[in-house]
Amino acid sequence: MILKLGYALSIKTTYLQKRGKIYQFVMRIPTELVPHYGRQSIRKSLRTEDQMEAFRKAERLAQTYKAEFAALSLNRSLTPRETMDAASRLAERYQTLDSFVDAVAEPKRQAYAGQCLETYEHAPVEEFLTPVEQETLRRLQNPQELRLSGVFTYYEQHHKKGKDPQFIERCHRYWNQFVGGVGDIPFADLKRSHVRSYIDHRLTDGMSTGTVRRELNQLRAIVQMCITETEANRSNPFSSVSIQNEGKDAKDKKVPTELELQEIANSFLGDPSSTALIILMQLETGTRVGEISGLKLEDVVLEHETPHIDLKDNEWRTLKNDSSERTVPLVGVALHAARKAVESHPGAHEALFPNYAKPRGNDSASAAVNKRLKRWGLTSHSFRHAMTDRLKNADVTQDVRDEIKGHGSGKMDAYYGKGRALRKKQESLLKVAISVDGLQSMVCNLSQKKKPHLRS
Image: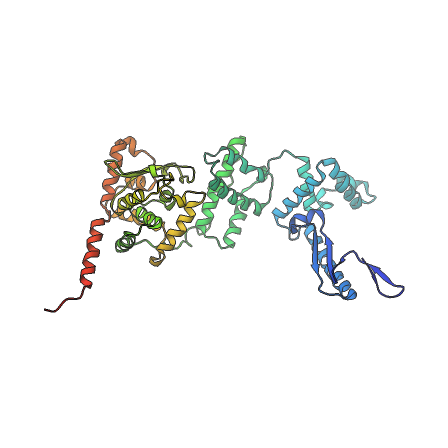
């Protein structure tokens, strides 16, 4: 844009445009920095109609952004991910090594060396190329090199849950988070120091050591799958990694008392809603909320000498691991709730609770259950902790406890036989079961006590 300052005087500026009567500042972003800003140009309203004021504002903004571009190009504040993303875009732009060398590397090399032939021949690329350009050069020199962005493909293709969208989405989120921190470096360059840096970053962000440990376990599995499938001759940098003060920041989770469990059971016993039925079934089985909310109607086996639920994967819900696939007897209020759920089932859907038979339905169920339990300061997972304590106090052995909760090795059926194993678990759960008849009697007694006495 040309600005007229007088009859015979004008200046040219490349940073001004007009939108209506208001001047706008416009500046193109260097190609290698486009990924950092997420756009190709910067546009700002200068909020003025006066051309000289607009010119002064634009010049100040231009100087600011030029300094910022220079700083970023020198990698003073570019994160590893931004560097890698910018290099990826630059490599896509030039496509071949020859075109990049001719257009970028060679002119910079000549400008840096000047007339000194020795400098021209021996100067390392880091002296005349920016970090983004150095990474671009490496990418174009080794186009087939496996990078962290390609590692997850092996996990998705070869993991037994690779077709489970919820599982893959969660794992991919963890992996992208890690790659975002260290950058899309070659897989061969992944080191223990990158893992350490990631741990420090997550802890600085306020994550608990327990959360970071869960993430590390997932990341270790992803890397191990890639090592195995590519037959790479290297160790897994995530293996046996420690976290300083691990577990010391853990908060004690509230475990409901026997009295609270009875109060909860009593509160939901006459409630026909799916949320109430899930709570009652969880309370007496020690299951995860998704294991109950994701049941099929056929998974509830009531016409059996040992009524039980059959926990297995289905199209809208997968179980956590192999040990989670099991049968759990129904006793007490859980048996009562299961019967009510089957009796009230609409029959048009194969799911026991159709409103939760969908992707991430277990998350919806968890939110609904936790909302109903909020008055007790509990969550759906509290019932699993409570079941552990209840079974321990009833002198139930650990192998049976583990089988009931899905922590077992799956050997009980082989040791006892399937029928006997189911009865063994039933016997254990009956020791801690909350009697429906007992609750109803308690309610009757309480209601009678509240009745006023009539005078004779």
